Length: 103
Image (cartoon, rainbow, N blue to C red; front, side):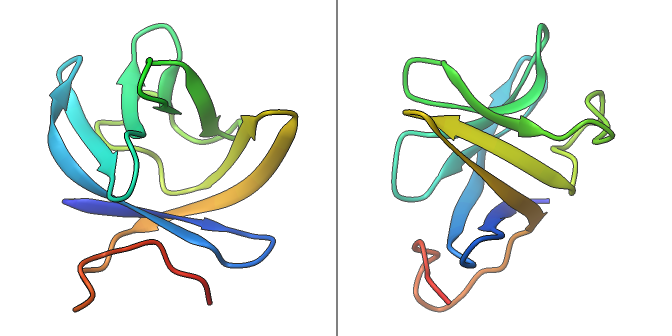
């Protein structure tokens, strides 16, 4: 898996991440438009983190936290008092270079 997409259930907003090295011995994925990462942290399992390493989303219970790759399941985000549900899917490589898209 070289890229992943978080698709917001509310409106289909899609955030693309491309694999960029490793972190804690597992693949690390960087969002194409911001310094946000999807990484495995020993104390939390898979989550997304901001540039300072602060977690801001994680798979819902039932997503396999110990997998080698981020679990393809529902994830919940939280930031600034807001929370959204996303579906994590394998990424695609569109001709536009993978920018964030709206449906």
